[in-house]
Amino acid sequence: MNIPQTSFPRVVIVGGGFAGLAVARGLEAQELQVVLLDKHNYHTFQPLLYQVATGGLEPDSIAFPLRKRFNDIKNYYFRLAEVIRVDSEKKDLETSIGPIAYDFLVIATGSTTNFFGNSTIKKHAMEMKFVPQALNIRSLILENFEAALLETDLDKRRALMNFVIVGGGPTGVELAGALAEMKKGILPKDYPDLDIRQMKINLIQGADKILKGMSEQASQKSEDFLVKLGVDVWKDVRVLNYDGETVTTDSEDHFKAQTVIWAAGVKGNIVQGLDNMCVVPQTSRIKVDAYNKVVGYDAVFAIGDVACMKTKVYEHGHPMMAQPAIQQGKLLAQNIIASLKEKKLKPFTYNDKGSMATIGRNKAVVDLPKFRFQGVFAWFVWMFVHLFSLIGFRNKAVVFMNWVYNYIFFDRETRLIIRPYKNKNKYSFEEEHV
Image (cartoon, rainbow, N blue to C red; front, side, top):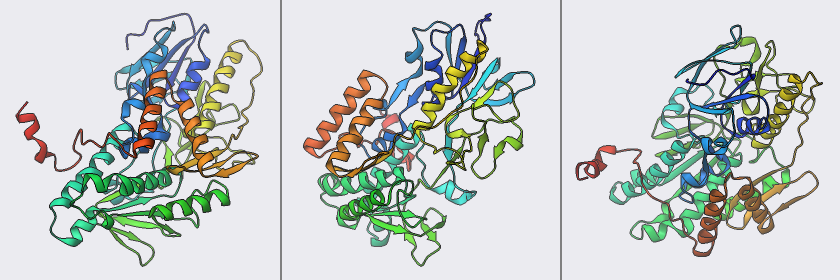
């Protein structure tokens, strides 16, 4: 990896998400060598991925170069690599660019889409965990409308304009709301010769309410918002299969659709080499103690979505969201420093700052520890929190200007098919005539 040897202890962090960045930041200005590994050279602000998928933002607005974040800090190194296996006995990490030894290993690999073992759904449905996947969804949505313009078979045209979102959590709800706003104010202008009224947006939730992790009030209000926008909300319905043409459920309702977006669950993105006894099979999360140390291992830690710290309040581990990841990362940095100074470590206690979700223009729900509110004010709070949480002044400025423009003109300028997702041969003439 061409990383210099040093007398300082080496901390290797796997993953540049919310958790990985938090622990890396906390170790600044310490007598340590910090090595950050990630398969992407940027940090992604995942809560706004759905806006990339629906043409509201360009990907570089929600991504920040990892090298830029630490390029002025001594003894910090970033390597673009995929981790293959950890060898805890040798304190060595095998990666796609070679091995690296560590004194402390922090696993912050986040989560990946959980298809619950259904390989057919995994093959045909779209997922949205990374920027390339969001761009795939954006291209597919627009390509389907282009294809619908040419389709003479009414059933096939309806299937091209039928969108099924599986999962009624924040991702599914926000994506459904964004698509509904496109149907209302944008697509009729882009496709005046297409009957956009035939477009259907279906949100399928296996539980008896959407936004299950939020209050009853927030759940009901968000459903009211979606229904008012024209979204068909299906509750207590479980998707059994999707073969690329038909969505099969456990009810009498089946859907002919060319676009199915899977937002029904995530699981930990574990690193190979750990004992199976320290991994929770159902969620693929790594068991950790109160200090985020992997159970049964020394100097190996797991934080964020991939970590499962069971408590009385969180019997299945903390929520797989940004705030627990950030808080665990900050505390782990303090505990690594404390352990080097042979001081007492501090156990992790999650400070729940609340939850929120936006359904569309002037529509959002916010659950704070002491207050709950919905509507316009909640929407402004949601925007402020997400804008403030972005990394980099440029990203904050670009996103803010995009939101202002979109709000004033009710438009989304970035609905571009930059890289086609399907029927790629149809677009090959672009390369031939360069």
